Length: 548
Image (cartoon, rainbow, N blue to C red):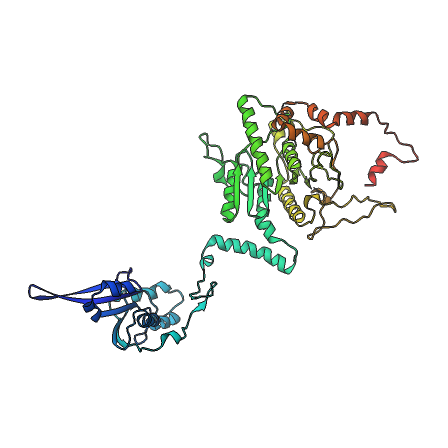
């Protein structure tokens, strides 16, 4: 009787059999259906059938609402009218229900009394409060009778309305709604031009480096609702990392290899992002970026570098924004070149002891034969007159370590992400012009041409910060035609030779190959032949520098 698998509606028939001069009584129960009533039951059994339904009502004299559905089914489907029908409102003791007495006791009870104890009192009772009814359904014109409770659905047919309440109980969906709500409030109240859908669903970010900068950039991207983040790093989490890199914890520092080394930074960072926000699509790639001046010792290293370059280039193709967050200068060369080859949005962030740099690289150089429509902005290497090379050679271990003030990375990471968001909202994207450099002492001939800003504000080329003076500079520099990373010559060379160019640059210790390829050697030779002495009437070079 107390089985919880009882159907909501069923039919019961009392069967009486005589066995050894004893009358044996059994009850046959079947789920209520048209087939079971007309095909399974015999004509004799139909004379003694009882229609039953699970009654959720807790009132002794009141019948629950399923009675209406059962009566309609018997009259409309089974056509049993104008004759007495036996109905049982089945109320098993195993069914949880709130009685009026329990509600009254709950209101007057002490607040420390758990509600579960009020429910448990109804479960221990073995009393049967089921009701047995005998009704006669009239044979009316049911076709013209209006039905209560049904509305037309999306297919314009009467049917039940379903409400999905899973989002109210699913923690992942609640987190996603909260993130979207925060951005929506910004859009509704303060930033009507904020494109939240573009940030959340149409922006894929590639983070090259999962260290101090990479962790801070990733957390800020989550705040902007970015759902697709990929880490690239080949390092492992060390004991000194968790206090400075906010995606790692102590358990990531040991026990993940046979010799007890820590977990790969890219893997640990992606796992941490998914713990913070399960709705993010966080991926990890453990690979090394080939660098100028870092030669390959064995054939296995050469083959591995070739595979890493192929994976890295495919990642650059598949993502919309690339964040360059590596430690050394030479590790930024290949990603800068790849983004120039595929015309990708690249944001570079670099740290010193108490200074930091955030800059957006300009668009790709024009193809051969194409006319340059506007002045391209420079990349990280456009201000250099020397090719990148091995910066860790002949340095002690302590000199190779990155040493910065702890508050520097969060500031630079926040600036980098905000620069990305502003750039994504600009009509020209990473091709947008930057504000011109303004002299300290402007004259009447100084150009004051305004640059169209983004809906979120101005879009500088570079942001240089100094913690010693809490000062910011926003210089704008054009692309250098002899740049070793983004000039047309080196871009075309990579398009033709691919990894062979990377191999030559990596095996070139002094950087002469890139300087000769881009024309930087000839440029420096021509600069050495220029007479830089200035007349007294025109002022000194130092005075000219001070004007900016």
